[in-house]
Image (cartoon, protein in one colour):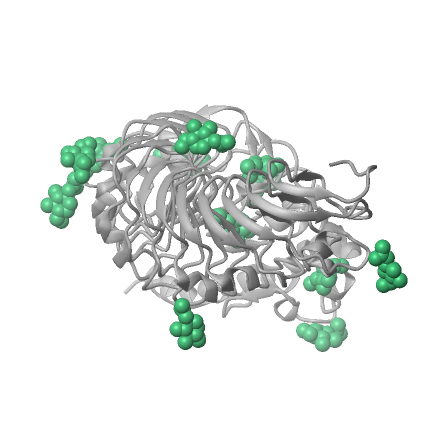
Length: 513
Ligand SMILES: *[C@@H]1O[C@H](CO)[C@@H](O)[C@H](O)[C@H]1NC(C)=O
Ligand SMILES: *[C@@H]1O[C@H](CO)[C@@H](O)[C@H](O)[C@H]1NC(C)=O
Ligand SMILES: *[C@@H]1O[C@H](CO)[C@@H](O)[C@H](O)[C@H]1NC(C)=O
Ligand SMILES: *[C@@H]1O[C@H](CO)[C@@H](O)[C@H](O)[C@H]1NC(C)=O
Ligand SMILES: *[C@@H]1O[C@H](CO)[C@@H](O)[C@H](O)[C@H]1NC(C)=O
Ligand SMILES: *[C@@H]1O[C@H](CO)[C@@H](O)[C@H](O)[C@H]1NC(C)=O
Ligand SMILES: *[C@@H]1O[C@H](CO)[C@@H](O)[C@H](O)[C@H]1NC(C)=O
Ligand SMILES: *[C@@H]1O[C@H](CO)[C@@H](O)[C@H](O)[C@H]1NC(C)=O
Ligand SMILES: *[C@@H]1O[C@H](CO)[C@@H](O)[C@H](O)[C@H]1NC(C)=O
Ligand SMILES: *[C@@H]1O[C@H](CO)[C@@H](O)[C@H](O)[C@H]1NC(C)=O
Ligand SMILES: *[C@@H]1O[C@H](CO)[C@@H](O)[C@H](O)[C@H]1NC(C)=O
Ligand SMILES: CC(=O)N[C@H]1CO[C@H](CO)[C@@H](O)[C@@H]1O
């Protein structure tokens, strides 16, 4: 035993004590000042939030502040607080163990200073939904980040894509709805294998969507819409078995859905609208968890797989503006709270599926310009939720179920350019929301009710209390007859009227018809 040995054994506890003393004293004194600077930068916009932020209070009891067990500030949580002002990152990043800065949905402005690079303990940086300006600074020192949410934050210029190389812990990356300088898909992202959330919609990306995305097998949400992407959907995307949402709309994508797309059986929302995709959608038959399927404005061909009729989660189905042929599955919508179909502008044939309103939820039934035959199924006479019924330019025929004329929530009834026949009820009591009536080019006949007071056309149809809203009325090319009073449309909001090619007679001589 030497004196030296004794000395070391005796000194160690003292050094440990001094070390902890210095840490604790840091938390008590040195963290107050940065927080007060934060307060003074923002408090004018919402003084209530900061009422507890006083020197007499412990920093850990400030509202929105979370500390660890040693009394160090680990979180600033003040999202959706109407805060405006410029963030003092020089102060914020003096908080040595700050792990979470959550300030989304505020009105923060100004830039982010280079000081941000000192916030090296940050795991969550949420500044989305704000009004910042300027460029996002280099982020490569924030290697512990798990969540980076900057969408709709107002930044511009070049995003520091290279920084992402260092952010290998990221699980949530949201940079959409920002007008960055145009850039190809950032390949750095392909290495972020822990990502479950990738939101890169509407942030000026172009070129091809690279193969390699399929390596990010934890992805649950992949959103790349509203960019300038061209070329094909990468084939290895079918490896993303956990994907519940895939948004690719409004790009310039070509080619077909990748082989094996049907392996994405977790998909709930899929939107590839507004591209130039082609080929059939037979892979869709396996995606039975789909709730929202949006494929409109593409070049798809072939038939709608019969299996879609069995999908009991499907609520919204939009395929207009393609080249689909054959019938719609006759059970479509029957097992689900089906709300919306737009299959307009295709080459579909056969009958209208009868059970899309089976659960009483359907609001839009849009099948314009196809080759549908048969009648309007009787079931829709009961569909009181229906707001738009538009089936014009098909080969539909027969009598319109009487209850259709009584649906009180309709804002548009468009049966034009078919072979419907029969009469329009003399007591057409329509809902107050009606904006459009188009019955032209059918074989409707009979007399429109003449019991009107003051002869407005709308009272003519006995829908007088709605006259101020109706804006389109097309009845041309039918066999309606009766007398049209000369002042019928006075004071209405009609901007389009066509009553031609009927057998109406006009009362008086100064009438415009
Ligand atoms: C300390 O904060 C609490 C709420 O966290 C508040 O009610 C109290 O008024 C504050 N005290 C002082 C002295 O500001
Ligand atoms: C933010 O402002 C809106 C509109 O003035 C107000 O309704 C809301 O309560 C405010 N929110 C907070 C957290 O102060
Ligand atoms: C970052 O912190 C270091 C000390 O930890 C300090 O010297 C430097 O000035 C800080 N940088 C910025 C930009 O605040
Ligand atoms: C980024 O990561 C690289 C490689 O891991 C490392 O050398 C570099 O120091 C990191 N950059 C920063 C700013 O931490
Ligand atoms: C794209 O983002 C910009 C900036 O946030 C926004 O103004 C614009 O409305 C967004 N466009 C779409 C289609 O969401
Ligand atoms: C994807 O993973 C495979 C196999 O692990 C690897 O060879 C390939 O380089 C990865 N691709 C990218 C773009 O990282
Ligand atoms: C789809 O999944 C099946 C079964 O898991 C697998 O055999 C097949 O190779 C997958 N197809 C593609 C294209 O990944
Ligand atoms: C759909 O297209 C694929 C190739 O693109 C083809 O192999 C398959 O037979 C087609 N399915 C139908 C039902 O036409
Ligand atoms: C009706 O549909 C046919 C195709 O089915 C189309 O060629 C024609 O232009 C449409 N007519 C009107 C008036 O939209
Ligand atoms: C209309 O609804 C009633 C009551 O919900 C029901 O009994 C009837 O069968 C329905 N009729 C049609 C045609 O769906
Ligand atoms: C218009 O209505 C008023 C009040 O209902 C009535 O007195 C009048 O005779 C009507 N005029 C015509 C032309 O029907
Ligand atoms: C789609 C998406 O990632 N939205 C995010 C936008 O920003 C807010 C605030 O940061 C997040 O809460 C959203 O998740």
